[in-house]
Length: 142
Image (cartoon, rainbow, N blue to C red; front, side):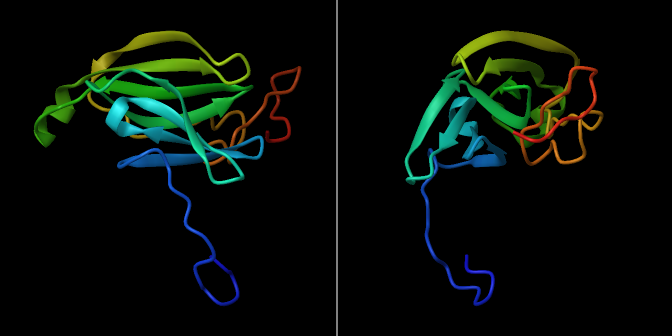
């Protein structure tokens, strides 16, 4: 969108319906693919690819990136909205440099996760990737 005129300059397709939680990372846009419980990436040329997906039985929501690791919440898809309060959720860690899933860990409480962030690393970590310094201090964004 052109800031001065408000005119639409381009429309870039993401990886399907229900994509959300956009986050800037190294000149790309990462986002969640809720329909497959996955993580997608939009390239500057307008193409998208899937980096990882738990599968069609899963839903993903909540994305944070710290030190080139993407953290996303994953849960089994629910049939009714009320079931979201009781869903078993987990957090997955995906290495963005090596393109491998590092781990998936169940959360000790029920319910969907709506957001992941790293406020102690930096206040902007909810919308852009962040990096920690050698002493654990917030470093420049990725």
